[in-house]
Image: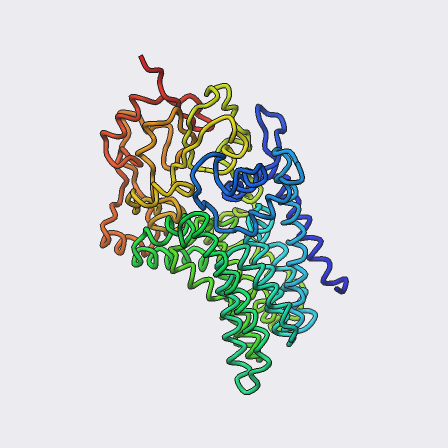
Length: 536
């Protein structure tokens, strides 16, 4: 890579390192305790740790076999570091450092993809845009697999544009991607369809992509057969939780409205990418950069959106689309502006995002959030549970990653949201109409729709349960008005959603709320820890 393309790689890795230093260290009683990933990634780490210990791919040693993850290849990679004997407090560090390396490799891939599409300068500005784009940084250094998969797709598109014909490269990337996360198959199939259409008069040039689809399908079939044999189900429990347990119309509606905040905040980004489509004359490049990643956006609508759709991280499925948009917008930028200062302004605007004008604007909103602790307790300070609960206690959590990972042997755990519990997904009805009081237009938060109020009476404590608040037991608690975004009220009301949550929310009835308040007391207001009252 030339020096001009190396600069954004270096800057991206420096920014990624800063994000890691703000988010990854965790403290206990004000002192450094260890390293953590995003809580969803820590669920995968728990499975990886238990696998390395010989317990199998389970959330708790000795517990039921439930597939509470969708990234088997990533879990196996995490297990590798545990097999090496790295202490649990430090085991997350190799994962975030891997993400940092992938970030640098990916920015380089964006540069190469842009250079192949429109020349050196397009590659440089595409790389700069990606290197300072907060959602791009987050998905690489948070411990999630999304950045790695997006990197694979970027190089896949780059090789396709170059006319690379070595089939084993595509087959290898496709197989690894599907092993890490099965929905990577969608992009592999989309690229093959595009190449078959582009090379319809010389179909042999598309043959490597067809072989890649075959390799990806073999891996997908193998994983499905293994899942049925090991877990007894054809699909992951999380897929049941987020997709098959939610009516199709609700999912599509939720998925469409989940895109609106992204279109609003990224309006500059989307606008220039659209201009790039009209200005770029390479039909093959346009189809590959836009339509191939678009299949993930459609899949995102089908599954009802993604919980990661905040200003600092954005939807993980949109990340694939962003990789093509970096190049398309950089192409438009190069065609429209000759002065470097205008290009710098564009990169800054894309990095910052759009939050309205005047008093409604928020300066550096997502950068501020990117450098804030991402977990449920202040300043990433891990609660000292042994000072509250005796060994062997049964505890319930919403965030099923960090605490069960570090306290896995000391306590027994229940998953309030059912990611690791088939009882919750199979027998409890989903709760919707609860999420659109937030900054985005969801009717419900994917994966946060099933509340385990059955087992809550059988545990010794609950910690930071989704929907719980300090005043949940207050007699004077009133209905919670919903901050309804534009365009949402009419369809929401037509579907039976109220404009206020009841005072007993998130409980399904006031009687259950009152019963909980009689049996539990709030003992830690910082970590929202409730302990069962001593029985007489």
